[in-house]
Length: 71
Image (cartoon, rainbow, N blue to C red; front, top):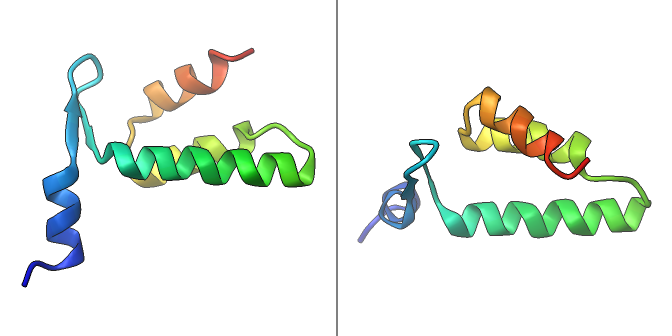
């Protein structure tokens, strides 16, 4: 039986421009969670998105670029 971490590695996808290997499902789940929390508290989600993307494993220069893009 495969462990949860092994299954997560199987679902991971390499994004060619950034070279980041992360699960698209994990990114979608993070985006949904950030959107729900931001909507619930009535604030922008940037202060949640940055730390969460760093925790997922996205390099800091792409996190900063992603946080700056919507502004």
